[in-house]
Amino acid sequence: MQREQISVFDMFKIGIGPSSSHTLGPWRAAQQFVQMLEQEQALELVEGIKILLYGSLAKTGKGHGTDIAILLGLSGDDPVTFDVNAIDSKISSIKASHKLMLAGNTQIDFRFDDDLLFLFNESLPFHPNAVTFQALLMGDKALSATFYSIGGGFVVKEGAQNQNKHEVDLPFPIDTAGDLLHWCMKTGLKISEVVMENELAWRSEQETKSGVLNIFRVMKECMYRGSHTKGNLPGGLNVSRRAANLNKKLIGSNSYNNFDEWVSAIRQTGEGFKNILDWVSCFALAINEENASFGRVVTAPTNGAAGVIPAVLMYYVCFCGGFTDEKIIQFIFTASEVGSIFKKGATISAAMGGCQAEIGVSSAMAAAALTECLGGTQRQVLMAAEIAMEHHLGLTCDPIGGLVQVPCIERNTMGAIKAITASQLALQSNPENAKVSLDAVVKTMWQTAQDMNSKYKETSDGGLAINIPLSLPEC
Image (cartoon, rainbow, N blue to C red; front, side, top):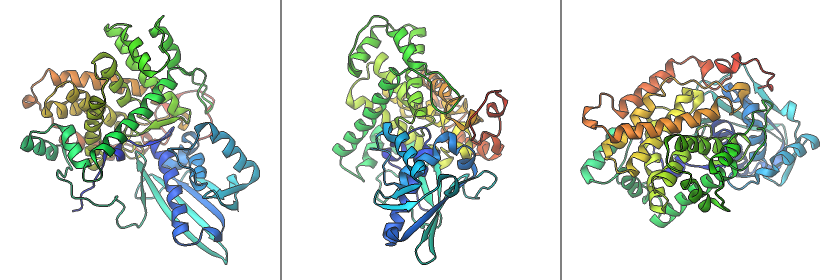
């Protein structure tokens, strides 16, 4: 059986909100379709394109910006570098002109309402997040391809034989928590050290560390921006942003001019329980308010759960003395390995598993990372991850209006607090006495996902999404 090889840069991807599976994934799928056209030397032959959205991508696509992401992907724009402030103007121009520049250089006619179809009542069997691209070529020919956005920005093309990045010989192949613990016990390495050894199979240590610190740079820029931006979130729900007001209240008279000074100012506010609790909530709110506003975020492991890991990391930075490059790298390495175990053994897609697959997984990742950085043993690290997920099992995904706002943003604050609690419990416990293993909870999560009614899997067909009497945008 072929093992899935997952790097830290697969679990943590830089992109644009509000959703990794409904925004970043479809964006990447559109880019891959354009690349396919180029490889077939068919790009200049394209006269028109039809886009068919199925399942969850159709039902919550407008609220998640799936349509916007696909048009930008087809236009040749990249989510890592595209100016988020230019999104509205570019989409408005496409709609008004009825023209689309494929790959930025091949102009075709494109009518938004006719050529981008939301098939609300159709779903494809492989995965609920499906999109089909049909390119109409000169001479009455056509090329088509179907892609599945399977969570966390991962994309699978239907019919492709080998979709993993190039295979390498990993010194420590890992599919389960049992595998990870085996290698740790055999070598004496910490989990983060095992991760580094595997990453060296792809690139140098310097490249890896530099890349991880770049991930942290985007996280902290997003958090800082979100903590200083007021107003309402887009989409029609008129949800007020809260992080900026909370930050202002908590920071008091302490002054600062940049992120590093902000950290120092936060530390000066004290270490009381209520104060720390409020700050962790502020950190998570800031990230996910930016995510909901089509801001630049990092999948951790998804966009909808992007605030949990940065919030817990920021807790470690501000209140546990972890503001060094090595500690930040250790934290992100450990989190990534736990996330990859969930992806291999279950899912990180809310459309497949509900919100347990997003907030639950991110909380487990954060709990594990915090535990290692606070000096926990390898068994305590895995115990912390298990505790965090155990208390997210069955969590539904029921976004109001198909928007990643209510209840999604607040759920990030809850996931962060649960992660810290899980870490503390593990650090004060003997893992030898644990009744539930991480592998058991991964298996249970996947079984729960399979049993869960589809209306609770990012469709806006159930839960809060149908019980809140608000005037909502079409989704």
